[in-house]
Length: 213
View 1 (cartoon, rainbow, N blue to C red):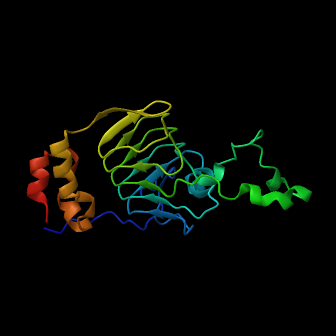
View 2 (view 1 turned 180 degrees about the vertical axis):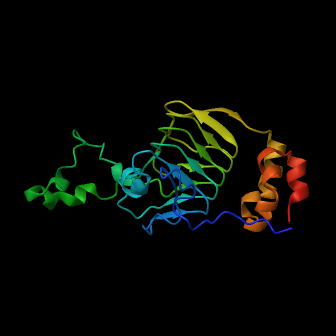
View 3 (view 1 turned 90 degrees about the horizontal axis):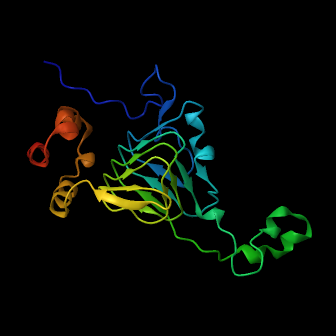
């Protein structure tokens, strides 16, 4: 009996008949974006424009870090720290960026609030049209409901929705979440994951623990 073969994480379009789906790791080129294997983005328009259309105001130096096995629905957008404006004076307009003699006042745009890197864990599902604000950290196994605007951190295996997003519930209790994090199936070798896909998708936590390498 031939050994099971993992899916290829280096193929841009894992479903050739569905060009709307791209794996992000072989797509992204920016050193400020890190994506784990098998995380994908789905967009019927142009999924290959993810870096420019879905990661906005990314002028650095903060990073966008996305883990493995994440599913990003159409229109997911990450707002980065470059979107910030001054709010301590009468106007929030960024005059120095418009050029002319206004550019002499560029110091007024330094030291703006910066929440640091935006970090997404492994096995996170983003619904259609979700927005993630700068510096947010989203835990492993979380689900972000369609249209949610995520302004604060999301716990491991949390389900959030709304604007601003609020925790609806967690997918498991604290004890079971600790067990899932200890198993960390997303870190298993691809060959071992391939052997246990059915357990990962539909088994119990005990089944998953028993399958761990």
